[in-house]
Length: 606
Image (cartoon, rainbow, N blue to C red; front, side, top):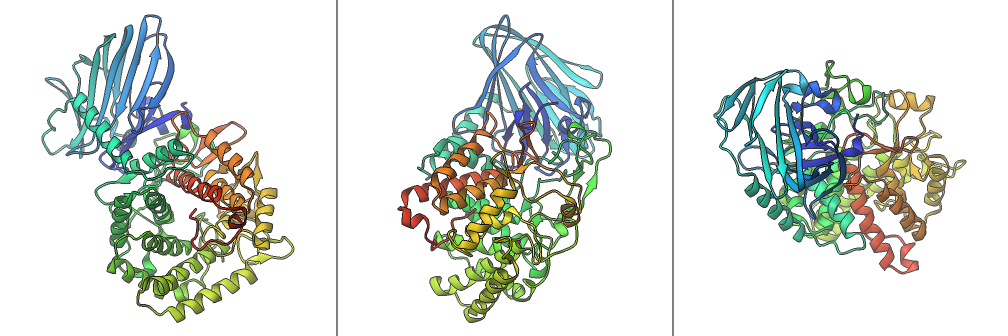
């Protein structure tokens, strides 16, 4: 089984595919991120669909990389007779989604093979395949795939197989294009033209980046990942390209992340705005206004890429799961949860858009006022919290802090930006929340804020308290909280969300066990920097950078015992935390020692 971090991502800003070191595309969904997979070997076996192009016989992979500033993946192999390169990419979408593969001879000659196993609907449906002049057409139900290449292929055991030899200087193209099965197959595309179009697109996009800090390569690559997880037609941003990659090998914490979490997308907006990508921020704001239309009480924590609300969760029993990690899920039942913090994150995003002088939007201000009107009473209710627990609702401290952020943004909109609203009432609610959190969310004996009111449990989400401006980082209560988290939730330098003990099972309603949570570890870096512990912060930041795959990709979690990435991949939440932490470290490096420990006029972002 290929390790999660051994996959590379290619995408066309509407869907994505994962390519292993062995040249096998083991995951691809058409035509959207959340569509049924036609290659699902990632969650099963090759019989559930894959497309492998690789040397025949003995060979060894000698390196892989993204072409600079792009999402074009290049994999090199050596054999006894020569060397070859496989170029994989998905051109930014025209009329139909394409996967393009070009085999380039580098030295000598190499015998190659292609094996295409199409299984629609997550590996459950074998298509009807017929020949065309330059390839094959595969059709089942609503899905059609057009496969074109100059290489002769044959059918064998429900597979499409081709063998060929590539010599130095030769380039052999393959294209796979999805189309609705009730329509005519799309016209063939020229692989070399598509490659140049893809290079031009990503080069133009990279030129717009305004980040000039110390980690330009790392930040830019994470921004490319975030851009690749954007559904261009609507501006929605998915949390990851996959479903059901486990948070513990063999465990059941396997969720579908191919949806738009308001929390993740909001933080991504902050990263894009900081890096000068205002078009992406505008597109996200428009997507939000459409998705959140209606009753504020019905605001969901996540939506489909076009704003769909029904994300019913079901299990795919025919798939054995990644390394036996069952169940495999599609859809997400957490979409029906009440998570109070989401209101704060959405309203903070709208505030940050104003701070960074995004164009005035009357609709955005109207949405903010409606959400605050609802939140004036709703903030007092228990919720499922940021970690989407499936146990009983609680008064989570982080949730209350984010409710405070919502009202703080409303007050600032009136005071600083001249918006019209009941600022006096919002100030009162803001002050009430602040008092309550300090009284009920802080434990004097522990000298720390706690996961929920009346609890003795720690939680890494408490690290956002200074990042959103609720308290300065050098407040004694935050110094105590960071010290407690470092003592009890940090192992091998990395932060776990909370303790996985029997009480933890009761809180989140699931069996214990998961890896270190990488976004929370980036939040610890931010706190260390804000407390003036800049050398420690930068050392931990470097440790996190070293966990990236050779392609610079990160999942959600890290297993220190096996030194493997865990969870859906690549994870937007992790990459956005990397970007925002790089910005925060640059700000702290430029500040004087006194300024580093002082409260910030603006939240630093997290």
